[in-house]
Length: 159
Image (cartoon, rainbow, N blue to C red):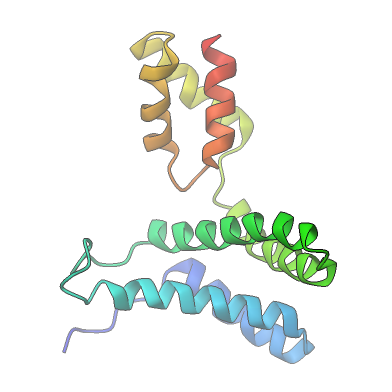
């Protein structure tokens, strides 16, 4: 039996906030946070499967953030579809869940200034060509900045 790993700060925060949500009887928040913690746990369990590409790799804080980002992305994609279908109550529910999850990502996200500095440094080192800078910027900011935001800024700075 492998020894139990330590919880990452993000997991400790989620667990603490789940307890707070229970005390406050905030069902939406409680469900959302439990789902997020479950998604992180599912990734960890998936890595025990020999067929998984990341088999046997330990979970990292970055993986936890990536899971939260994926959950935010799912909500982002679902909201317009619910609105199209005239299901505003579901769209609002997804929006609330997305806002709750976003608050956990905000603290780990790069500010615009930091992002601009990273991209400027990459442009300086690799020339002012979008095709050359974008993959490097994406790799360096992974998990710390939204891909669309990175792309917008790289485009802007390589013009």
